Picture 1: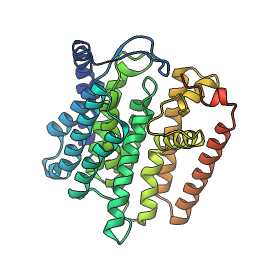
Picture 2: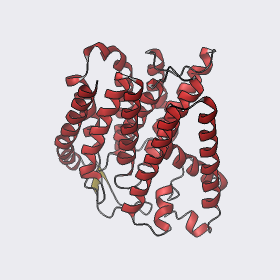
Picture 3: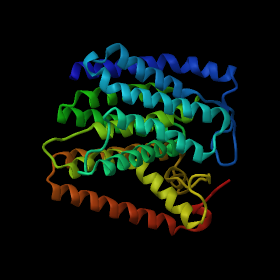
Picture 4: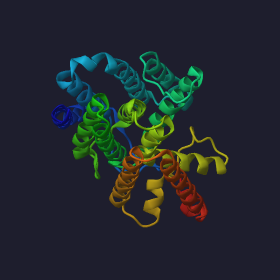
Length: 339
């Protein structure tokens, strides 16, 4: 398993390094660029379409070097990821209404369920289906929301993917390992061009793709020796940064009585860190470190009893809500900061 995982990681890394300059030129030729605005940090038009390079690197690495025995298991994830990437590309092109984007993501989520990729916690199938849809939509959009600073979404996704690779090795799960390794390689390759100062953005094409595949990997991860409740704490912790950031944004915007889906603003955790004095690079690196801390907790929980796992989850939730409360007590000029 280790050799295969390493091969797919290297393949995805090399493919992303090679493909990103190509899609960058394509973005300029087709005028697929993100122009500066008051709520954005970049000052020059920056090409989008970086997500196409990430998508191509992951899919090609899996097709070229993945085990054919697992192709049918990857099919549902790959089809859903392709659809959600197309939805992101469409949004990058014409700026879809948020509600339409959310409805469009329902189809890929249902494809996962139809191909057997779904939550298995409850005895009632309807509850498992509902939780699967909620999980996929939330994580997909959380990673999309997180894409608000150079290198942030790609780097946090890389950290999460690295921990999924480690957890797959601990549980002997080949499929999770190769999927996460492909994501890890593609994200690192893309980061060479996307870290501050970025020469290309992934756009919704990339952020929706990363969020969808990470959500699917979280569903596929299993620790048979543990009860389902403990197993499900693990992907929640691995994806703690996008989950925390989205929760913070939703609470902040609801407190201001605005729609969290349709209202944009500089109220993400990264923006708040910058207003507290961090540079943009420092803010991004701090969130990488936070992702590593969540990942270490996930590894601990993977070997924990149900009581130990519940203690970690409850303590993490209390700490997270306390931080959100503290952030929301800051003066309005520091807290909101919308352009």
